[in-house]
Image (tube, rainbow, N blue to C red; front, side, top):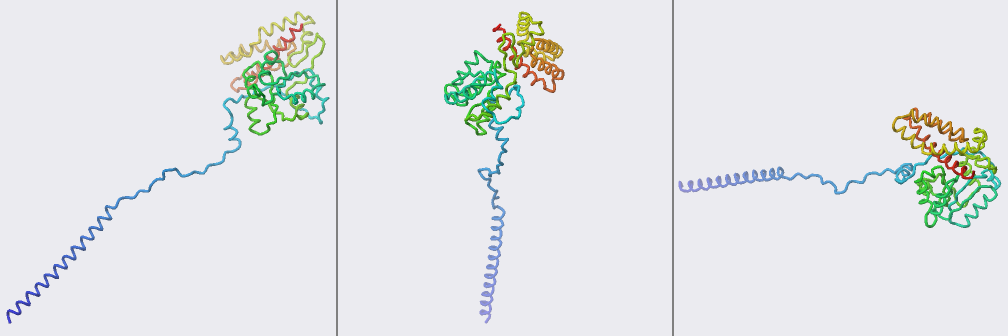
Length: 350
């Protein structure tokens, strides 16, 4: 009996130990699983957002028309010189006879098309306007080299050998021709085409085929209305100087008048550059004195326009900081060149 109890007791103890071991094993497994999960969470690598390889497309604002115009301005664009112009007077429909108003002026027409040459020559044939025709840009330059006393140059944009753009650039590089306005003669009417013409130094544009009113208006604006010359050898009335007035001031003594003209060109032909140097050196006193002398002599020889321009320049250099004198100096330089060339032409005929 005792043996049976002892055997049962040992079985119970064995069962209890086995159950305890199973519980301990289960607890250990659960604890190990928690540690694994914790390790996985803590050691998970940080995922950073990947930057795109290409920058996002930004909204591009459309450029304003005036900004586009600035962008296409060429670095060689020529700043316009303030060539003398007069305000266009109202008029009725222009006829061929109306061009007689411009009798005595000289026009250079650079045009390679023979038909266009004939049309222009025909329109002006009875006007008394002196017309010189060049067949290309190079021929126009050759003509100017021998005679620069033109009131206007009409320049065809597209010509063989040298086109109107090349010829205009060459003309604008020579200060000897600063007094001559150049007007484009072209069938190109697009804004870009016209802007390119202005950029190289042309003053304006006349569309082909020619319209009589447009031609009249351009000639009117760029002439003074005093170009007509008296056929008398004793008189030379032009926009540059009035020899009849100058002779009267000199008591009708032609030799004395010619001597004054010669002295004027010898002493003052380079006065624009001298005045600029005096202004740069802040020597306004000397510049004023020179301009006072020039304005007086200009009045005595009959160069009234030059007299007025010299007075305006003299008044403006008293305060050079406002920069008004710059335009006045350009006007003076142009007028002085015109007077000197007109004096030379006048003197050669006497």
